[in-house]
Amino acid sequence: MGLEQVRRDWTRLGSAEPLWAVCVDPGKRGGGWDDDEFLASGRAEIDPALARLEELGARPARGRVLDFGCGAGRLSNALAAHFERVDGVDISAPMLAEARRLDRSGGRITFHLNERPDLSLFEDDSFDLVYTDLVLQHLPPELAEGYLREFARVVRPGGALVLGVPESERRTFKGLVFRYAPWPLVALAQRVILRYPAPMRMHTLATERIAALVPAGRILASDEYWGGDHWRHLRHYVALEEAA
Image 1 (cartoon, helix red, strand yellow):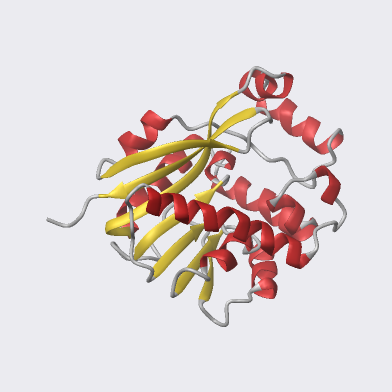
Image 2 (tube, one colour):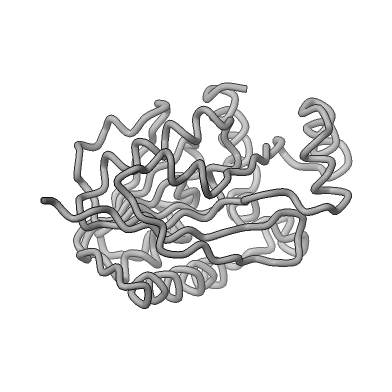
């Protein structure tokens, strides 16, 4: 599966039910997310994550932040409370339309449609922080790794990355299915049994691989979060080396 298939799937998800596709909660299907509740869930993630970054001794400037895979802008709005400028990037035009509808930043967020396997729309050293959560898992590994290299390029020396990704599958039925079952079978089950508007691919990304792909970064902590499901999710806090 290439980037074009990712674009088609997330365009379909964004057209059908964008808020639920961002926060997959069985109780929120069919338009169950209230706008204010949806945005509040973003603040409930971002505020403690940034506090944790500071606790670890990383204090990037509060100028400009990249929200990669911003979807409907849940985290972009929360980041705008902490940074002067937020750039939200997504591959799905319908998701971005919803993000613009929900934009409550007073003009401090710019949303970008990016259909490329890179971040060439941004120059080197453009951001104080790159934040992404539960996005890279939906990409084929080679694409996810390419974007990680791009994160390291666009973040400034002395900046930071916060990366939320699944480290491994748990030994539950669903976790083992994702690990061993052929993808076409998983996709069919999501469409027919779970009634997803489009399938959502899942991949893991090992901590050691992140460290190899961001050689100028130092992983300060890898905190487990969102427990109790079928993957072991880690939020990695990465500090980029200061300029010499």
